[in-house]
Image 1: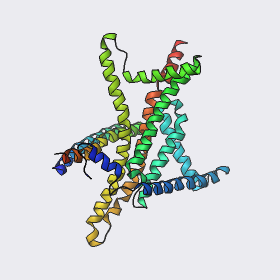
Image 2: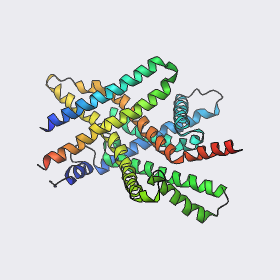
Image 3: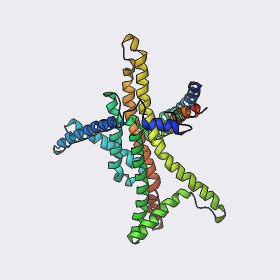
Image 4: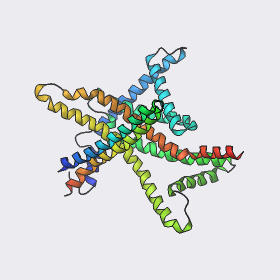
Length: 67
Length: 265
């Protein structure tokens, strides 16, 4: 059950990371001179989305162990 | 050892049962990291006397300095050059701290206590900078040091209460204040957990893949080392970048005031 939950979390976070990457790539190809700024903002967004999965990884075992 | 509720996983993470290094191990790894940083820095200093940098370490540190300076000035603004030493210390500690895991079994950043320590330092440094910017502003207006300190402290705290609302909306201001304080506390957790999760996750992926290839005696997991190197750079960059963003959030008003003054004149 825990594995399934983590899989679902990974699915959602993967879609989110992909969307961020897609947006950044679109922006970069449209405006190559803004690559530096876009990369920085993309990394910040990636970090925030990644944190959701990490929190899931750390919180989920505890909430499953209690049941 | 089983503990009930939410305390269990957190406690087992802090006590590092099995995976992370023990406290003495962490100290030894930290000694390694400090040794590497000091040794490369000393070697880099030797090349500074020549007109053109021929020393490899001097070149590396020059490029690193330019990168960090660019990040600070780009994120915080023109007064961001002041924060380069702090940010560069974080960058070096995180990068070298994760980098040793490419040669040794584990690394200090794979331990939550080290990351939490760094995150606490970063967040409290941000608070200190927020207060000291107000202090400097008030000193410029001619207040005496004690008044400037107290008023600066309360002005910094008042940032947590969000935008200025009417008297009727005091409960909402209070709620915003509480939520902002909690989010400030969660910055520690998010900074440290992100670093810990990425580095420790990388180690566990390598271990799992090595286990997979153990029947044919090929350490498949070690093919992940380039990705781990990339993780080292990216995580060091994200930690420092987020610290820069937090600093820019608390020290930004200085620029706005300067612009307003410029418009007024």
